Length: 244
Image (cartoon, rainbow, N blue to C red; front, side, top):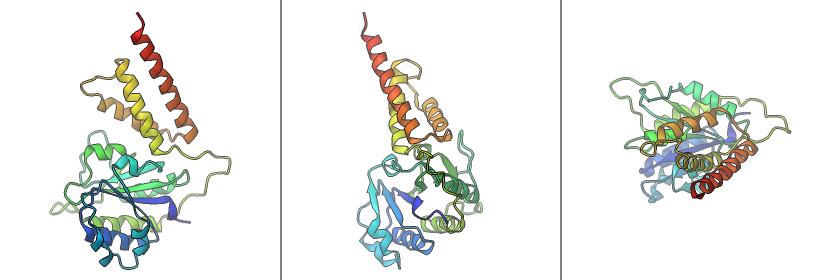
C-alpha cells in the first residue's frame, strides 16, 4: 500500500489558477486527492478547472488555510521544497530520501509535501516549519522548476513508494504539528520570561529546540504532556516574577 490518503499536498502562497489546475491533474495521475492551499496569493481560482483534467475531485475536496502552520496542523511530518542548496543549519534531502521519509512517517499519521509559491518559493521561515527540506537536482542554467513540474516529479516518486507496515494497534498516533506548534509558542513565552532566550533574537535557539522535538517523533500524548508541563512552568514563572 502506498502513501494514499496519508499524503497531503500543501501549496503555499500559490497565485496561478493554471498551476493549481495542473497540480490537481498530477495528483489525480498518481492517486493523491488531499490538497490544501496555504495563504494563497489570490482566491480567484475559477480557471483551475480548465487544466485539472480528471482532477476535479482534488479541487472539490481542496481546503484553504490562512497560514502554513494551520495547513500542517493535522500532520505529523512535513517536508518543504526549495531550489536553494545552501541552507543554514539544514541538510537538504534528495527527492528519493524525502519520499522515503514521508512513507516512513505516514505510519504515524498524515504527512505533507509542501511546495512554495511561483515567485519566491518557500522562505527560511516557511522551511523552518517543516521537519525536513528537499531539493530536486537541476542544472545551473535554470535551477528553479515550475510549480506543477516539481509536483509531477515528486508525486511520481510518492506514487511508486511503498508505505511501511502499519504500526501495531496498541501504538499511539504521532504528535500532530498543530500541537507541536502550540508547544513551540508556549516554550517561547516561558523561555523568554525565564531569560533563557535572547529577547532580541529568540528564533535561532527556539527553532533548534523545536526541530529536536520533531526528530524525537513524539506521540500525541507525549506532546500534550510537554505542552501541559510548559503551561505549568509558565504559571510558576509568573508567580516568581510577581513575588516580593
